[in-house]
Amino acid sequence: MTTTGYEAVIGLEAHVELATATKLFCGCPNEFGAAPNTHVCPVCLGLPGSLPVLNRTVVEYALRFAAALGFRVPDESIFARKNYFYPDMPKDYQISQYEEPILVDGAIDVDGVRIGIERAHLEEDTGKTTHMGGGGRIHEADYSLVDYNRAGVPLMEIVSRPDIRTAEQARAYVSELRGVLKALGVSDVKMEEGSMRVDANVSVRPVGTEAFGTKVEIKNMNSLRSLGRAIDFEIERQVAALEAGERIVQETRHWDEADGRTHGMRTKEGSSDYRYFPEPDLVPVAPSDAMRAAAAASVPELPAARRARLAADWGVSDADARVLVDVDGLADFAAAAVATLAGGTARDVANWCTGDVMAYLNETGLSVEVLPLAPDGLAELVGLVAAGTISRNQAKDVLAECLRTPKRPAQVVQERGLEQVSDAGALAAVVDEVLAANADAVAEYRSGDDKARKKKRGFLMGECMKALQGQGNPQLLNALLDERLAERLA
Amino acid sequence: MTDGTTPITGPIRHPISRADVEHVARLARLALTDAEVERLTADLAAVLAHAADVAALDLDGVPPTAHPLPLRNVLRDDEVRPTLDRAEVLAAAPVAEDGRFRVPRILDPS
Image 1 (tube, rainbow over the protein chains, first blue to last red):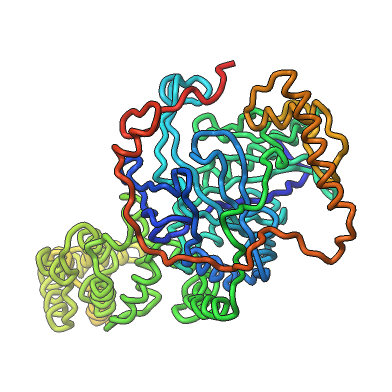
Image 2 (cartoon, each protein chain N blue to C red):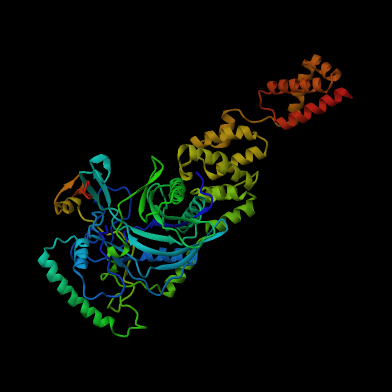
C-alpha cells in the first residue's frame, strides 16, 4: 500500500547495557551467561537493610558519552524509584532517573542530518523471567521462573527527539549511535544479545502539517532489520487506519518477527501510575570539573571522523569506509595490514577486507578477531598480487584457504604451485616453441582476415597457456605473443 | 494498568476522594474493606492538608529538595565483591525450581 501524503514522526529509546565489571549499585559481576541466580547479593535482591551504592565507572562512562555527543551535564542529577508490580525486580521498584537525568540535550549527525537526543539517564536492568506452560507466552503460562543475575546491571537509556522521519533513518541513527558507544568502549551494543534494545515511538501526520499525530510505542525489535521492518509496518498500519477514518489509539505494540506485524498489548500504566519519587537511599550525583575533564580526555576518534580519515588516506569509497568502521575490528585489522604492507596499496587491503573477507564473515557469522588470517598475512597476499606472482583470481582462492586455515598466503601459493611464470625469457621461449609447433595456424593467421586472425590468435594463446599449465602471467604472455605475431606479418 | 480513575498529578486536590484512595490502593495491590477506605480517605485528607500548608508558602526560587543530607557523589569502585550462595538465596523463596525463583502466574488468562 502507499503512504503518499503522510510523513512519519519517529523517536527512539535505546537501552544500552554498560560494560562495567559490576552492577549499577552493588559489586555483583555484570556478566552474561552465568548459571541462574549466582550473581546476586542482598542489594540486587532487595533484601531488608541493604543499601545501594553507585558504581563510579558508570558515571565515568556517562560523562564520556556526554563529551562525545555534546550533551549538557547538569550540576546535579538524582535517582528515582519507579514502582510497579512485576516479578522481574525483587524490590517491586526499579531505580531509575526521572526528573533530573544525568545528561540532557545531545545530538548526533546521521548522514548529514542532525538528530537531537533529549536525554540519557541511568537505570537498573531487570531480571529475566521465563514463562512455563502455554508455549512460553505470558498470557497462557501456568507460572514463571525468575533469574536475577541481570537485575541491577547498569543501563543507559538514550531518548532521541522526534527528529526521525523514515525507517531507514531510524536504522542509520541506531547504527551511528552503536558505533559511537562501541568506539567509546562503554558497551558491547549487541542488539541480538540484548545489550542494546531499541523501542520506537511512531506517529504519522499529513505532509505539511506541524501537529503530531497520536503516537504508538513499538517494542521487541532485536536487530536493525526488525527495527526497520517494524517501523515500516507501523507507518503503513497507521496511514491505513487514518485513511479508513479510524482514530489511532495511544498504546504499546509488540513486534512479532515471525508474522511481520505489530500487535497491541494491554493498556500500559500511565507515567504517573509508576508513582516515581526520589530514591531516598542514593544521594545526588554532582560531577566535578575534574571528572568532566577526565571524561572529555578519554574520548577516542569517533566513527564519523574515522570514516572520513580512511576515505581521505586510503582512497576508499564512503560506503566501504562505513563497512570498515562499522564491522567490529575490521578497520583495525585493515590498518594493521596496511602498516606491514611491502607491495600494493592500502586501497587493495581495504578492497579485500570489504569484499572477500566480509563475504566470509557474513557467510560464517565469525568475527574478525577469530580469523586464522593475521593482518600481515593479508598484506603478504596483496604483495604477491602486486608483484605479479599470482593473479587476482588466484589470490581469491589463496585467501579463501587462508581464511579457513592458519597457512600463510606464500605457503598456499607454493603448495598449490600457483606461482605465475612472469619471467619474460621463459615466456618468450614458450611462445616461440608454440609458434614453431603450429606452423599451419601461423600461416592461416598471416593470410586470414581480421576475424580469422582473432580466432587463430586466441588458439595460439590457449596453446601457450596450456604449455605453461595455466601459470603464465597473462599480461606478459599476451604482449609477447602479439610481438612475435607482428614479426611474422612484417 | 489504568482503571478509569484520574491519576493524581499537578496541584494537590483537597479533599481526596474515595475513588482516589481506591485507585492508589489498587496500584499498591492493597485489598481494602469499605471501612478501611472510609478511614483512609479521612486520614489521607489530613496528610494532604498538611502538604497543602507547605504548598501555600511562597517557594519561588527554592529548589525542590530531593535529599536532606549534605552529601554528593557517594561512589564505589567498579570491583567485584562476593555474591551470595544460591542454595541459601533460594531457601528463602517460597518455591524454587531449576535454580530460579518460581512465581505464580503473572497475568490473568482472561
